[in-house]
Image (cartoon, rainbow, N blue to C red; front, side, top):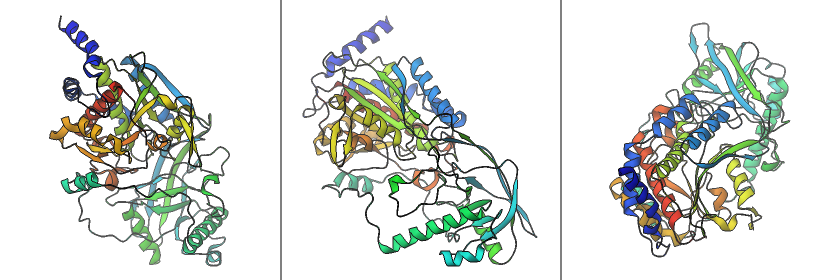
Length: 527
């Protein structure tokens, strides 16, 4: 009898909110309370986290681990009863890459020490261990580099001065303060458009040319590996992304080959080290004390296919007049390769999977179709999301939107990609028409201090693929926690850095936004 009553309630739910509109927003308080109860009492966020990090992490685009993670998501969504679970193929992307083995050992006449480091993605490995001396490269132009000609083959090259160490006075983790949230809430006025590919000044061009000439020189000299230091952090943190090819500044950025592109030249082996270990080696060599490194490094390139895949799953709409319209929620499933991609961005994928699970568990009957999308290729430039948006909704050609087949069927897209931190509000992307609506939908979460609505336009992640078409697409405001200071793109981005309560609350808030959007009388207004 209890099961029958719950089913009757679920079927009746759409009638309770059909009168809601953008200009006259309300909150389905009964549904919000049910979402909260399901999301707090029966949460699966850490179960999903285990599989996407400990088991299937890291998840570099076109790697076997991303393929396995894709399979896991599809199997999970299917088992929950989602419809139209599928892969969206896009491309070409290029080669996959997988780290198979890595160990780096340092010896001096006085001491041995193991070195903390990670090869940059798409760096080639070696069939057997490499042994060679460490050399500091100080040439800034071709004339100065000639002093090293014929002397670098098989050597390990330090290419920059150590970062100066200072005490860490600021905490690694933090929440957004009331003052910062007030600043976000008070943000107003149109922001200046982001400029891409602007004209660099003469000094920048000179630096780019010098870097290109140095890279070409090193390519010809064939050292064992190029060593630099983590671009952020201390205490053994190594923040790293992908290997690079010599970048000719006379060639436009978007026309240069990428290291993963089919047929691209093989880069030199490039390794980033913990700042403490890089600095120690640099100081020893600078003082004339020799350092010899032994590198045991194997990597596998996967060239079986150039294309990649996004993951799609749906809860179909039920209103005959609106079921072909879509409300999307998404995050990127791919990661970099040093940690297990926990906060960037298994956390976002976990939250969106959980939001779908909650809605399905409650038997919601949305008027519009709710569509989950987990993207690949985000770390290389939002590639998967842009490909999907281009296939379905349209393209931006020189500032002019060319609508796609489903352009008029799009209602909204919601994204999570700023770590494990709880939602504290949402960015309007300069769409002032939605302020009252979003404030209303956030009102049930005052006790979680998640009520800030900011006019600001935020970027750097997959919602931009839709926002660029003038479609309503949003990133939530999240507590930073340790994201930009500790975990982002680093070896510390692991399961342990995830906060279960934050993920649960974020999934609940996302589920309510998706549900209310799917039940509106009209689509969200466009900019």
